[in-house]
Image 1 (tube, rainbow, N blue to C red):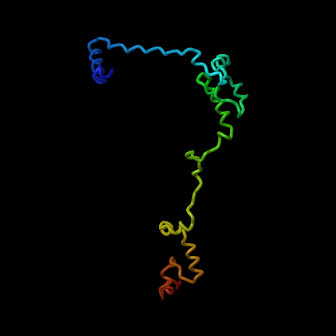
Image 2 (cartoon, helix red, strand yellow; image 1 turned 135 degrees about the vertical axis):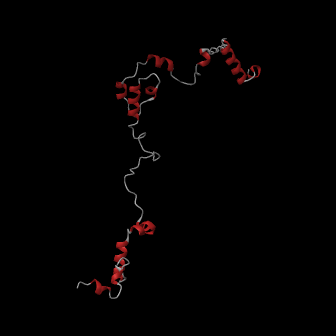
Image 3 (cartoon, helix red, strand yellow; image 1 turned 120 degrees about the vertical axis):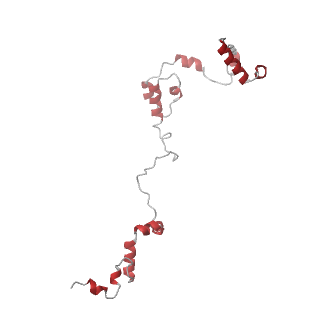
Length: 173
């Protein structure tokens, strides 16, 4: 078909020209009717025991919220998610289905389920190695206590106390 018409672009250009001239473009070809198969060929084999589905769905009344109340975890929920079921009934049935712990268990793949308000601190050994902790003086008091226990002078002690004669200047007159 594409080769006899010259391809899509030539068909498109031809139709655009016809519309500009006021002529109707060629009508679309009619869609062939679906071929119906005989009932004998469409019926399942006698060895397969399947209940007639069409007869059951035609005879069933519309589902209501009372039907949802009678559902259990072993019930068949497939008839509640059909296209012709009222959305409130469908939602109630699905809500009842997902209260079952089998379907209501977190799998760990959910995004943003953790509590990110809880702090997750670094281990103190790793925190001591960071340059920022030295700049912020996070562990200075522990270092001073360790230096005082070892008898070493504190690195934060005033330099005036280490200079001889500075103590005389600092004393009141």
